[in-house]
Structure formats: structure tokens, C-alpha cells
Amino acid sequence: MGVEVPDVRESWPQAIYTVTLGATPEEGGTRTKKITVGGERALPFHHFDGEIPHPPVVAMEVWDIPGEDWPQAVRTPFADVMDDPGRWAEKCVEYGAQLICLRLVGCDPAGRDKGPEEAVKATRRVLQSVGVPLIIWGCGNADKDNEIFPAVAEAAQGENCLLGTITEDNYKTLTAVATAYGHKVIAESPVDINIAKQVNILAMDAGFPLENLVIYPSSGALGYGIEYVYSIMERTRIAGLRGDKLMAMPILCDIGREAWGVKEARAPREEVPQWGDEQARGPYWEAATAYMYLLAGADILIMRHPEAVGAVKRTIAELMGEGA
Image (cartoon, rainbow, N blue to C red; front, side, top):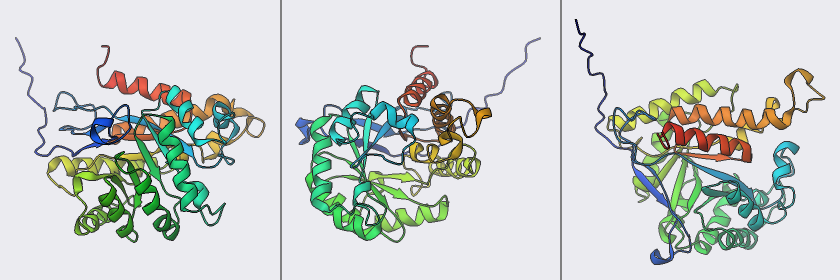
């Protein structure tokens, strides 16, 4: 006697906004390819529930100064190019990066305190060196970011970059220059849905379209509160799919910075012999962190180690059913 299997598929009323980065020469830019994320009508990789038109993508991180505080395990693949952000970006593309995240660390007043002219030089160098779309991330000091971003956004005019980040307390300058020069924006919040919504409302009130935002809800590494961040991201994605337009944006996660900042990835084997070789352990830690965020709804992953990037891209392809 046959048993009827009930239809348990879920239907969601709202698609996640689609965000395209990069502009080709026909569109006024110089990119050789564009990247589109978002558009999902289902939870991550639930192809049986609804359309997932665009797979998550992997960006690799490039700094405007050498990553001197990076552990040796992740410095080694870039040892010969870290003094040149253009060559560094080229190396990342060789390793499979679909986007480049240029982080303007050198502009931090607590560090080298580089000015707008030097930030523009680094931006142009990367744009000239690679054809993939660009994420440009400030130094994290609000006043300094407000000083450098007008010049950087103008220098990258027409390239349709993703600029970051705006926060609840610092959003006016970046939304204005992104509007003026045709860029998208990362909206950052400290693992809090209500603050995430407030940042998006502030951007909207400033005249910036919601569909040009990417949410960055902060990230944690594997073993460092990741389950809490996961739950916030999952709730965000469900809210967006249910029809909350203030939550229906693609999600970005800053994997590399978090994963390589924890002792489990950084500590050399001599310090903790039972943990094994850090040359293998670190990439595993980064990849495992990325896997968690993929399942929570991440659309853009910013990563560092080539081996972790390769593993994550293969996993994305499998989860999207490519080659099956």
C-alpha cells in the first residue's frame, strides 16, 4: 500500500534584491566581467523551494600596505607581491578570486595615516591590474573614511564598485559619494537585526536606494560566537524572504579577517603541538568558517588563503548542483 508524501515545500513572497557589481566598457567602466548576487526566493541552497539564480561568490583581500600582521601561513602565498596592491590583486585572480576587496588599511590614523591621494593611487593601481569587480573598504576610522572616500569614489567612477561601510553613526558621506559616482554600498551593523534595519532606513532617508545595499551583519570566526551570528543572519534572510524590504538585501561576510585573527588559525605548531601544522590548520579554519556562513545566507565571502578559497568555491559549485 503506497503512502502519500505530503508537499512540504515552502513558498516565499519576496525575492532578495539583486545587486550587480562591476561595469564593462559598454557601460562606461573597464571591468572584463560583472558579478551579480541575490535574487533568491528560497533559503540557502533549498533549490526545491524556489529559484536561486546566482551562486554565492568569493572575494579575496588585498591591502594598500603589506599585511605585516598576517600569520606566515597566509602571507606565504603572497610573499612576493604584498608591496604592490596591483600585483597582489593579480595573484588573487590567479587563485580564483571573483572580486577583489581592496582594504585601505594604510589610511588609518593610528597606523601609516595615508591621505586621499595615496588611497586613490592604490585604487587605480588595482583597477588597472585586474578586470574583476572591486570592493573598496575603508580603514575603519569614521573621520578618515569620510576624508578619503570622496576622492576614491570619484577615481573609481563608472566602475560600479561596492564601497564600505556605512553604520548607524556614519552614513551620510558614503551614501552621497556612492550616489554621485555610481557605486553600491555595504551597510554594517553589530550582529543586531534592529540596528541593521535602522542603518538601511537611514540610507533610504538619505536618498540611497535599498536595492543598491549589501548587508554586513558583522562576522565571527569558527568557535567565536559563530552560532549567534549565524542565527542573526538566518533570521535576517527569513525576514527578507517573508516580505520585509528592509531586510531583503544580499549578505556579505568578512571571513578572512575574522578566521585568521584567532589563535586556532594563527598559533604555530611549536606553541600548541597537539593542534598540528598551522600551514594546514589555518586554511581549514577559514574554510570551515565560510561553510557556516554559506548555510546562513551569505552571498559574498571575503577570504584570504588560496586553499580555503578553492575548497569553498568547489563546495558552492556542488551545492548549486553544478557538474552533478
